[in-house]
Each structure stands twice: as structure tokens, then as C-alpha cells.
Image (cartoon, rainbow, N blue to C red; front, side, top):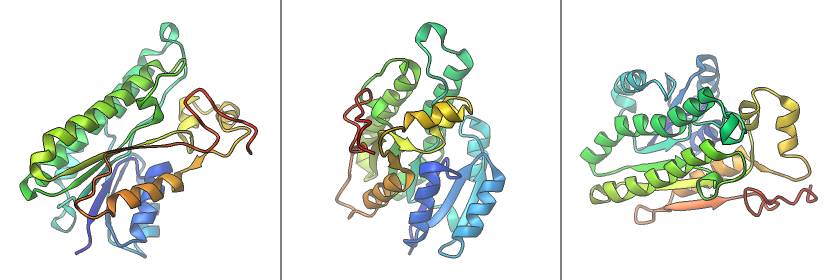
Length: 252
């Protein structure tokens, strides 16, 4: 029987790339996102390879998360793999001038949204004593960089929650692991800089960043390991990146 994977933030970037590679490897998919038009487009594209169901919700909306996930038809309801990918960075300001709205958006999406979706899925995994949860973190989960303050805090929280989930769910045979990407060329910087395309472009100037497909390939590797293997914590950066603040911009 083909495994069923639920992916949040599936309409762009790492989430979309992961949906594509899993579809081509015969996983059934539940794709979650805010933009119905993109969900429909992706469902049409991937239905050539596998069965696809879509759920439209914002992970920050607690009631809708639970309503939508509980509405899954039987053919898609036993979730074998949960990929907590949804999340964003908003702004890059020092703490004293940071936007409260930006802080709320990051805390609500990166921490609370991950918790809401996990809370909706975990009970069925416990009942079956089977399941695999992948939490998408960041190198910002491992170190704090200038002006990263609240974003880094939210990703440190993801790192802690990943460890806590792994401990708490261990008695039930549920695998839990995190993948922490460094600099990946996605819509991430466009959102962080609020649509300032020039600023976003300069983030990746002078070197070759990771692509969404690189992370998707790693996610596929992680979820396809034998049951006795759990990749608990994995950090991946482009060759040009040594840390959040050290990037060799002469390697392009």
C-alpha cells in the first residue's frame, strides 16, 4: 500500500518541490496551502503520477486546521508522513525597531501553526503506533544572526519541539526528525523583504544557493529509510555558506 504524506506550505518552494518528488515516487499526497488556485494547479499536475487531495487553510487558523484535517476522506485520512513545512520570515530589523505584526506572523506560523497541524495528526499515528514527522527548521534554529532575533527564536523553538516530539512519541514507535536548510532560493526572501525584488535577489548574489529541489531530495531520502532508521536532525547548507553570517560570494 502506498504511504500517504501530508505537506503544509505545499504551493511553493520546498513544499511544492517535495510534493513533486514524492508524487513521482508513488506516495499519495495531501497538499495543504492558503492559495486554492495553486493547490488546484499542483493537483492537476501531480495526478498524472499519484492520488492527490488538497486542503485549503492557513496553519495559523486553529479552528480551520482541525476542521480541514478532520474532513479528510477515508482514502486519505491515515497520514503516514507529516511534513511540517509551512512558515516564513517577515522583516529583518533589530529588536528595537521590529514590527509587532511581523513578530506575530512568525510566531503564529512557525511555532503555533506547526503545533496545530501536529496536534491534529498525531492522535491517529499514536493509535496505529506508526508514523513519521518531518519538521522543517533552518540554520537559524542553530545560531542567531544580526537582526534575525524573532525569526531565529521561532526556529530555535522548532528545534526544541522536534526534540520534544521525538522524546514524547518514542513509546509509540513514531519517527520524528528535522531538516534545517541554510540559504535556499525560494519565495522566502521575497516575503521577508515584503516584495522588494532587488533586496531579495541580493541575498543570493555571488554564489549558488540551495534550490528547493535539493531539500526535497533530502526529504525523500529521509522518509524512504527503513523503519529502524530515523534521521533525527540534519543541517544542510550550500557549499558557499559556512554559517548564517559567513558566505563566500566568489564561488558563483
